[in-house]
Every structure is written in C-alpha cells, then in structure tokens.
Image (cartoon, rainbow, N blue to C red; front, side):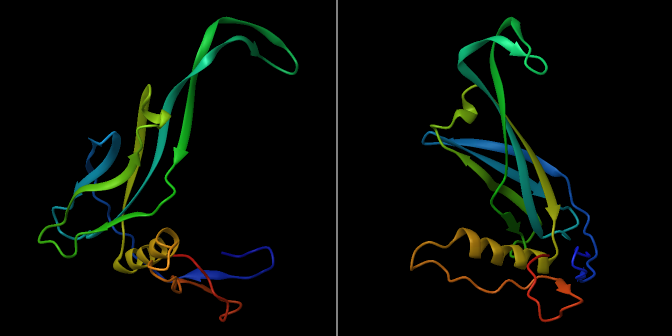
Length: 182
C-alpha cells in the first residue's frame, strides 16, 4: 500500500488457505429471540480456524401507502398502485470466529452468527441472510481473537483490559510507526 503522503506499507507473506464450503445455516428460537448459526467442516482436518461475516436483508411494510411516486427532477406522478413494501439491509459488525484446534475432527456445529431479538422488525415479514466463510491461519485467528477481545469485551472493571494489536502489516518508510491490520 502506498498512501498519498508516500508512506509505504507491506504485509508479511501469507499463503491463502482453501476455505471449505458452508454445510448449512440453521436457526433456533429461544425465549422469543431467534439465533442464526453456521455449520461447517473440513474432511481433511486442515482448516481449524474460521471466520464468518454476513449481509442481512429484510422486508418491512410501512403503515402508510405511497399514492405518488417521484420520477425525475421535481416530477411527482400518481403511483400505478398503492405501495407500502420496503427493504432494509445491514452488514455484520462484530467479529465471528471459531476454532476446532481442540477437537478431534475439524467440525463446527452451530457457531452463533446473530441473535435477533423478539422486538426486531427483521422477522416481521421476510428475512434473508447471506453468510460468507473464510479459512484463517493460526496467526490471523489470534489477531482477530485479540481484536474481538479489545473491541467487544470492554465496559466494566471485570472485563479484560485492552492489549496491543500486533498484525502482519509494517510501515516500510517509518518502521517505528504502529500499524493495525492483518
């Protein structure tokens, strides 16, 4: 990476891992909320470190119908029907990782992805989730695990204290500069 101020950044060489396919996405209803899970395995027992992210889409119905529609500029015309259907989108914002290193086989069963509360509009009409899975190296997993701990588990005096994130990206033009990233 070269920035506009001529700083250069380079990551360590990392061999890309072949990511196995997702076996299934499942869900369970628990006391009103719905939890969505990822299920996967590697028959060669070589992956061992997994990461997921996702995009959500859900349909909502507005209370009022649109009797008019905007076409171009300032032109508003009567709508050829009453419309009250809208779609909303969201992306995952938390770090979802899992490891099978302590297991006899490389199988992930019901890794929780998202918990949708009962008051959410997401499940009121239609809901869709598009999940992506990535195989990680041990070092990438440890980096994300530390980042997750630093960003998601802080807030009380009993939580873990933040620690320094050491990724595999370095600044070539200023070796003393701290860089966050992997």
